[in-house]
Image (cartoon, rainbow, N blue to C red; front, side, top):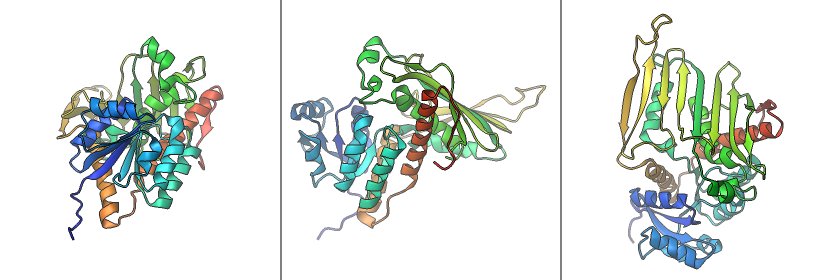
Length: 362
């Protein structure tokens, strides 16, 4: 009998043919420990067309229903880029079928739905990870190294993070991200998720005590958020501000200010280049001469793009479970839940005319 090793690629099925699935399909192909095993759509023809358009090999199975891919014994894990409103049903069904789950963000319409997904994953012992790609770029590890260096950065005081993209009229009328029954969290769920994750990341994933939406939220006629901002505050005085919008020019910035240093990133969500990414740091300077220490640029190279780094890490964790009997890594669903909690709190504050929302006990 052949010896099973962790060198055998994890077989990933793509459940849904959304535009982002094109990027992740390429990422699966580039990840050294993963392979595309199957693709599913509600229509066999759509699944076939997607496979052809993305250059899937002939060996990839084509499924004309989501139920069919769940039953495929040659699929270890599923990438699920379905509309957010469908996550709770299909992620639970995937977990119940024993499939590990790479779930697009936002992970659910609210944390109550996500808790049901996590419970199903825990019951079946499957790994869950969300699709926040920038978290897996090697630059992110370098950002963390600086932010938690007590000598260079000191204590965090404030972080500002934003993600904005200017969309066209067709998007504003037709895209699923402006439809309340599909991706009803709008710009907050689609773009704000990244800005919130950055704020949590800088705070070592400690939840803020208070969250409040900023005045000026823009809603469409269906009540879906097109643009909003929010402030977050922690017990010891740390603060954060986030901004997300479908109505403003491109912005993907992080600025963090500590007692000894400052860190800036211009392209944290999607790096300017696939093969490298940069950030700047500025060390302690005086009141009378603030630029005695000029900003220093740091560049971090990567052999594969950040989305492939994400797939590689997901496949590694699945491989540990499949071949070595490891238990699922709880870090990823834990930070997904915290991000969703802040999304929920901002949405609640928007609905309550910018009321302060406490996260104590949530």
